[in-house]
Picture 1 (spheres, rainbow, N blue to C red):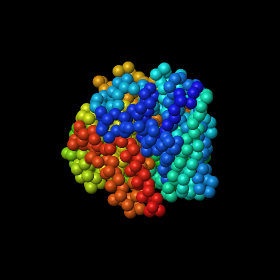
Picture 2: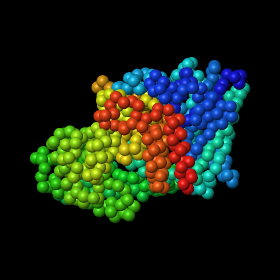
Picture 3: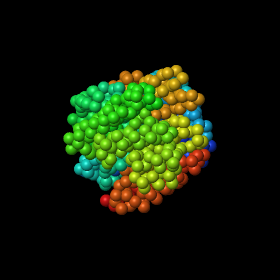
Length: 602
């Protein structure tokens, strides 16, 4: 195989490369004029082909990532990538598990996600799932690959490289770290110089972008499987919002007996943070840091039907004194149990009645007030937050504001004036739903993770949360749902890019950021590139938080405004697809500006 038949180049974590054409999927000036263009295979924000150099920047306690693209003119077997270590000041190394290689798996998008005819990047093979390589081993592959079934049209393979900079300055003193990334194939090779500038600051272990990603599938996993997902979430700075873990309960009229043993065994390690220590095999950001909040077990049946109610369903005769007494007594015992452990006291408690989710009528509003009052009788008004989800009107919120502490508002209803008004009245706002609205019909889905939109819709979560001074919620990270066929099987995400169908709507990668490893022979969850983009945005949020904490809040706001230049969300945003700068290199430059400001301030 001749040297000239294989080429190697690198790019940032903000784009994806088409395995057939070798071009950025985001190189679409017909969609956004400021999408990346030019000869980016020769030079881009992190890559200089002439020097053979990848240039990166990071603080401590942070992941930074880049991609290596191998392109072939004809089929090539046994291509190998090795990257073992970066060496910096005083001979310190970043190596071992702190350098991770992944092979990109390609999802075949065959149709545009519903409602995104203008901004979808269109049908193509998208690099998405990231198959991990065992620590210390090379990444080996063929082009075309036999596993993904792209076929003879595949001419490119993406490799993803994660680098974690240790938290302690003794382990990663500031300065430039260098290492060699080697790509080899029969008859040829290329070596890339990787230069990482480590700034003299560390991102906090706590995550300051408030929020979670709603999930129900963890409830059906065993402890070991569940722990793998919690570890992945923690490393990517998000929290699974699971409604709801429940202890065993027995109720006889107004006597309530709760057995906490199974509940405690499952969740204690998350409440006190030991799940995120070496005792449980964890390493990375948030070491030893507990989860930020828990959704309490309480719920009612939707429309009077179903089996989600806890502690007991509403009896056929309706509300009775005994019914209310059970709710109050259960709430009282729950508070006592949580208060008995000092570490548990620090975990924020949220009451969310999923049976009233997105309910828009006066009868539902009355139930919200009624159940909140019952819980307050048992737990006190300030011990927990009563949460509602939905795009409620001004009038509805005026009737609920004295009861609601946390409002998770759909982005189409997230009007700035309304949210600011109720924030002043003690209602904390979070947003959920699509980040960009071509049309109001985009509100049909609560997700913003679509595979065929650019990665900024995932990265933008952290930036928009800062701009709007609010939290966020996303719908699912493990979803596969087809109401037409009745299929609900997340393992099908490996073979079906269109993973959510309901009525006339069909979405690619909706509510799906993590793949289940079993179909590819892995006993662990597998991250997606879209999850990495979310992580990048949540890490960026920490930069902004640190700037504000160091007295540079105006600098943080100016940097955000230079990227997110329009007001996201609400009715006024519908039809405006130019909410932010669309070139990911502009976002990278803004992060570097923030990092330099933090490094100077010390």
